[in-house]
Length: 394
Image (tube, rainbow, N blue to C red; front, side):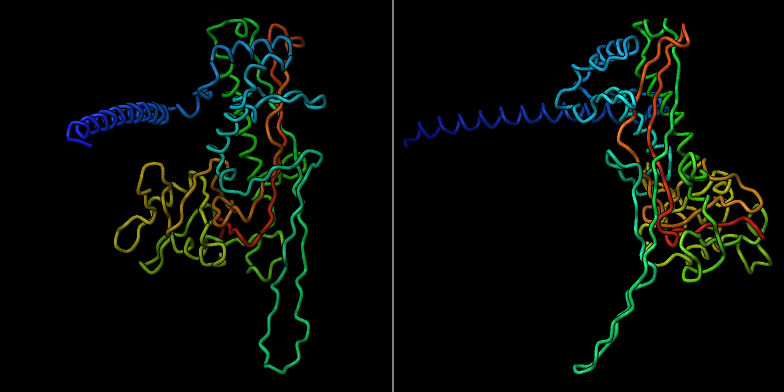
């Protein structure tokens, strides 16, 4: 290859490389623009509550038109164009006994808001109940398998075998029925999908958040705080009874006495009660009024015991463990269980049937169109050693 051919080849390679750089820079710029738009939407005040955010392949106007058609006819075929490969997992399935699945995108948006707003839903173990079953059963080992040291020629007697406790967590039904006037259904400028997403999610959040904490376990899930408690250690309590620690004062924390004690001491006592196997994934859940008190606690050097997250979006830390503020915890009062500490993923299990089912009723309450949405979900305690409660009592 002579010098001229070499130069020609180098020029061609250089041109190809410049073209590659230009295309790569354009692709990076487009991706950065998309990320910036997402971050801007997430940072907008109230954006996570009121924004209806369908996937890019779903046209908002077309989806609203299909939803209006569904409202008038209750025919799931109105959403046929949205059941492509991108949204197939969220598409509609006919269910003669329970109505139809909520239209694609609507159901995932509702459940996303539930996860964002209900602390225990985020922290607990969430499992799906397969079709044909109404519950999941769990076995818990009572006691440890024993082991013995032996010499080379020693006999090997049978070791102790543990017993098992079976826990059943059943599905319960929750429903909501927001109504819209027929005029708003027909009005093209009214964002029906956003309204339904907001209306259904707000009602489900309130109902499920309260049930997972204090539900009685008959018509709704049995809440974490609905189980019996006792001031006895793990080995001395029966399964299903949660250990509590008293604050020493009715409806609050004790006050500092002559500099020898600190109201935060009881929080340290609570962490020590939790077995090491649960500590690595432990969290605090407390009501807002308890958090208001804890924020004011200081160490002997004047530092606040509750430290803010190091980065935006991270939870505050208390004694080295993340803190969740949950408005569904009981209000502070005498004997209230307004603070919990533990590994909630191992302590509490939420079972659910995938999706939300919905029927549209334009007939029984004219001029309103009712959207009857229902969901199957349950919850229960599966390991009573994995969580400790603070009892605000003397």
